[in-house]
Image 1: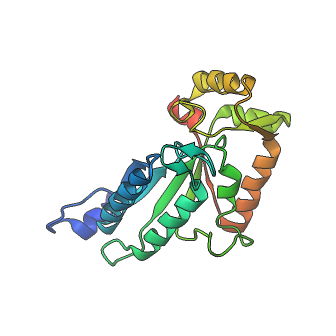
Image 2: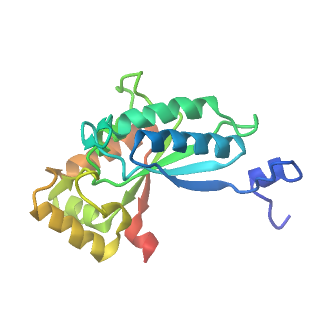
Length: 213
């Protein structure tokens, strides 16, 4: 056998849906309406056998003022999505699968890293989700140097989620110089990542500058 088709092709070929793709990449919008539209899209795609990769880097952090009031933050939105994903299956053959992608500069990153750890409040745990970090080289440089790292709210700073390489580094440093974020030790974030990996097997590590070169 030279190759075998992906599971959705094997499951769905010849059926009315004709959905043969393995994975779909989605971006969750900022408003409450966007969250529930995103949940509907996730439900449709997952039920048809598709795996989901979800970008949450544009979601406002906990308590940030957005158009329709204070944001509940990424952890609360992920708890909602986790409950939905736990109810879905890929045409009854296997559980739905979704990986949430987040960059380590996001204001809520430390809370998100705790969402599958053993000490997490059971009402907030997200056992049905997988996590991946979309890591810039600048973060790893700060870890190596035992330097400071600044966490930003995407509702306050603009554009970081769409940048990579030197352009990302330049804009990130400019926001730091403007004092628009919360300063932590880069190694504290790194330690939280390692502890989560030891306890839960994740997050997956993806290096966005290498990917985009």
